[in-house]
Image (tube, rainbow, N blue to C red):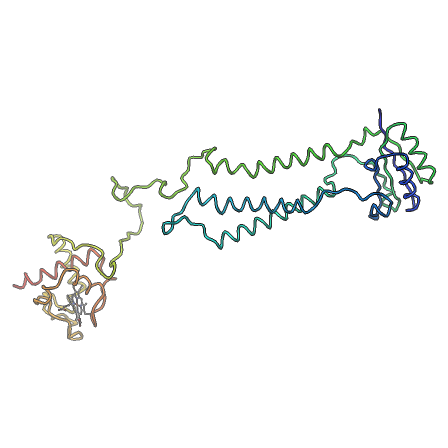
Amino acid sequence: MAQEVLLGLFDNLEATTAVLRDLERQNIPDRNIEVMSNVPYAPKVLGRRPTRQWPFLPFVLAGVLGGLAIALFIVVITPRLYPIIVGGQPLTPFPPSAIIVFEFVALGAMAGGFIGFLLQNRYPVLVRQMYDPRISEGYIGVAVRADDQAADSVADIFAAHNAHDVVREDAARYPVQSRRFLAFWAGLAVVGLLALLAPLLLTYNIIDIPWFNQMRESPSIGFQEGPRRAAPAESIPIQGPVLINGQPATEPLPASEESLQRGQLLYEVNCAICHGMQGNADGSMTKYFPEAPVLTTDRVSGMADQEIFMIITLGRNRMPSLAENLTVNETWDVVNYVRALREAGQ
Ligand code: HEC
């Protein structure tokens, strides 16, 4: 049975209300009637039943739950997948987590509310709609979808209430919104869900991109492994801590020939001005540091290597710290040489 769409234009509210009443008497279902005007009349004003709308709040709540789920995934699951152990415990810091949860819940509520608003207003309009520009100029349009027989009586009703104009067209040109509308939203839901879930393929290594995400998995050569690569040009050599717990961090170097030779050079540059070339406290600066002691005494040879190391590194009273002048190994070389001074003097 072919259908028609009829559009009647009326110039006042009373006529429109009367038309709607007569249409109801003709058993034209309410969902087949559409009233268009440039003033938004509430259905009650036109004597119609209030339109059924999508409820708004459930959309906001669904958005909140969705946002919460995403936030909990980021905050709870991700750190479990990639644990950073701090103090024996996996790291799930509270304040940043709270911010993430808040942000995603707020975002979800907004997105849910927005979608709810669109659905309530039956957006987007995806089909051609019966319309007449005169509606924008103040006429009230009543569009009715009816099958052929009913269409004639609808036209009669329009005429009986002094319709300014009646347009009749084949309903096939104006498809019903609902099916495309549902398809649009179902499609959007599917696409949205896929977009949300796609990153999980990476997270759970279903799509496995060979890339390290832990520092210990990154290519490196441990200090105990050889052969070691040469340090890149212009790299800065660094050494470990000089002191640990106030004690030398390293063991003394053996007093080899080479160590003693290096120690002598370094002693003559750094120490001799105060302590003298042979450790006899007769350097060029000794008169300004009369406390600078002779270094060939029993007192000095009774000292542990570590103690001399500490004096050189930290200084003592008016003797300055020489840590900036000597590296750790150089300091041990000097310690060896200070011991050798006494043997050389004997
Ligand atoms: C600016 C002068 C000066 C320089 C340079 C200097 N010292 Fe001294 N050194 C002193 C003074 C002053 C003392 C005495 C500190 C005190 O009052 O305990 C001293 C004390 C020492 C002592 C302790 C001796 C003892 O009997 O207690 C040692 C060991 C020593 N110096 C080694 C060195 C070495 C090794 C160097 C070079 C790496 C060096 N010093 C560079 C001034 C100097």
